[in-house]
Length: 292
Image (cartoon, rainbow, N blue to C red; front, side):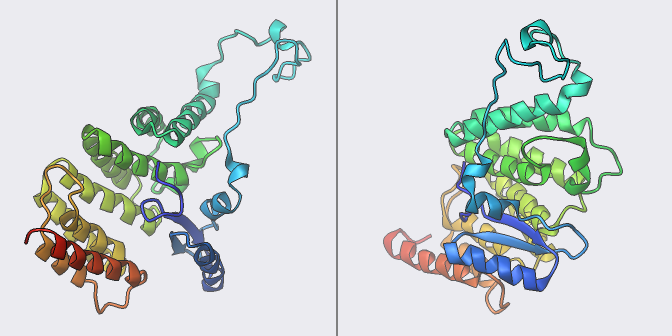
């Protein structure tokens, strides 16, 4: 799994005021962490990713084992071995617990660079969560009420998208799985924070290139920058498809990469330095690679 706070996995936070935005941004910049901040006055603040970066030990996954002779956690007063040990729990009352176990197992696998296995766990979680979503849930924030666990769905859904991208590096079949997941998310939760929707739509566009359909990829990126003209990462993501041989079927096209990157120049967009770095990299590879 890409490390939190990097370009591949920027921290995503949400604040309510511009003053708070400047305060949080200064913390990220102090440590050199990549981040995305959403200014949403009508939504509760969420700086979980920043807290995770500042205090990673507090977010370590721990497993609690109940001894056979310890008091049963059900509160009966009996020893665990004479009460609930070995009993079949009712799935309808414990589904969140079961999903949380799968979710946490996925994080452990991801941290051990077993992206494919992590995604298999998480796609099972996603499949089971979908059966609980209702039509009135228009955003992933609305859906938080159906799940209780160590993670919140807002963050986990982004982690799943990122990990599917990692898994696709070694197993190209995950490009299609990533595309399917992102499109499902976009359809189910059209009123989710714009930053999250942008990332999902960008990931879907990248996945078209991954499955060998650059025409649809171009179409998806074109719609993305039309919908989010002020987000520089749509331009960068699109240009990257032609600068780098990220996917097996994708042939670099330096002229097209330059054309796309330069679409964002002159717009005074945030993170312009990242765009300029891409243009510098483009000139470097042009000098060391055959003309493309």
